[in-house]
Amino acid sequence: MKYTKVQVDLMNEIRMLWEQHGFWTRSAITSIALDLPDVDFVVKRLLQNPKDFEQALSPFYGDEIASKFSDLLTSHLVIASELVKAAKAGDNKAASDAEKQWYANADEIAAFLGSINPYWSQEDWKMMMYAHLALVKAEVVNMLTKDFESGIQVYDEIERQALEMADVMAEGIIKQFSLY
Image 1 (cartoon, rainbow, N blue to C red):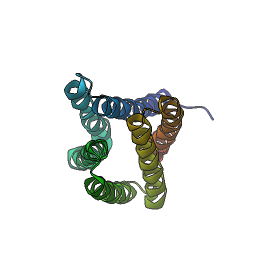
Image 2 (spheres, helix red, strand yellow):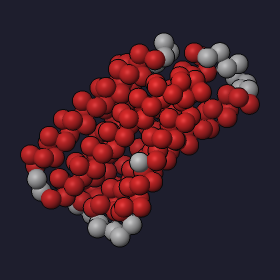
Image 3 (cartoon, one colour):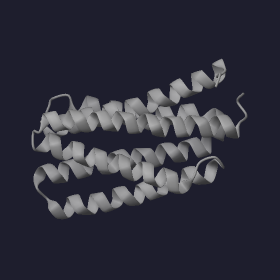
Image 4 (tube, helix red, strand yellow):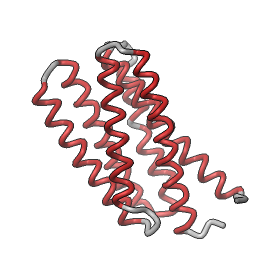
């Protein structure tokens, strides 16, 4: 299939955003788990990712819908941070509570995305989000247990899966807005 410049630009932008989501999430996990002095800077950069998504989606969905996605994605990241901190502290109840909130947030994200684009399936987004959460949780466990080799293998899978989500997102936008 031959792609137009508009399609390629959109695909590249969405892929970059999902790549950054995975990279800065890993960086935040590392900084929190290993008490690195850059944690505040890394978390600040990670929390820029939802705003970057908002900016990318706004021309298609308008400010209100783009902002709602940004809010949901910010919650996803904040809950993940709470989960990492609770797991690091050995607070199993807090970690379990955060994980339940995290999956509920994933359900919200999937339902939201499924509602704004007829080419996006809520069930597909739910499966992708759940796979993402399972991989990030494995990444957290590997970092906390200092199993760095396994952590790298998990990150490779996170990257592959993030690109899958990016492609689904970009293809849906291309179809919905007839960007041919």
